[in-house]
Image (tube, rainbow, N blue to C red; front, side):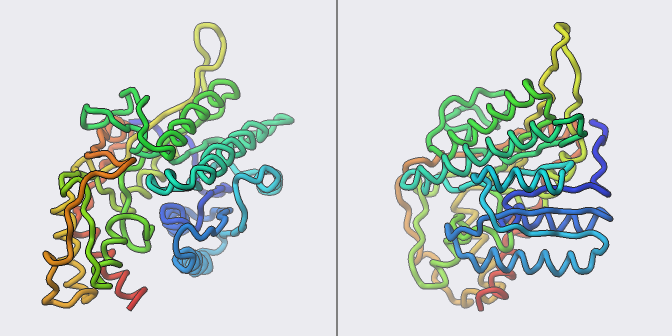
Length: 362
């Protein structure tokens, strides 16, 4: 077990992508659990998906922050690819912990809109790394821990399952995956060169209430409610390691409090204070079983009528570019270091999503 060496209380935490799915839930949970704490959040509020969901998340954060005084949350609408903006935030707030969750997400979108991925995922993350590097200037304590989001997509065409962080990941099948692997390489280089404690987290298919509308479960729900057919790729023979949002947040918080130790090697030079973990449920679900449970929970929540003809609204189609047939997380290091294993049952998570969807849209 790794010891906690970063106390989140009385710290300033900088969260990028704070209006996003994971970012907003992380901010809310930290405000609830750690007192007092100052959280500075940034998000560009782009229209990649329905901005009203991002606004709803920020509203919820505001409500929790108001109840959590003297803890506070300050939101900055801005883009991490703007170096001046990031520099000003670090200069003004001097964050102790940085959690980089801002990124252009989506595998398929990267095929048609590659520029946005380079801008956000490469240039944006570079700006974060540079700001962390210069946080130590003039003898300052600087950033104690940088935690950043990677993705299960980096495993690409790997045949061995479950996916281990010890596996080579040299076969990306999308630009999105390539940018996330690039982030890992850049973080490792900065950890080595500038002794920045860094931890990367490879997330596996995160889902839950107020999630991203471009994710399958959300898109399926929209289509089923509209009476459209849903397309199930690879003729239903895909498996995904679905991970509930609360499990992701818990994992991130545990990692935030355990920065890799700074130490020197035999040559007297710093060893990179760097770690990498999978956060997944370690129980891949067949996509056909997944959509069956989803429609049951949508009926239960009255999003769909009780007599809904589900079979008439699904279509099995071939695999599409950028996708992989299975994702499956080996979470042994996470369990060994933190005694934590995501375990929310799929039905419980989809039930929570269906109930939120009814309240938000109906």
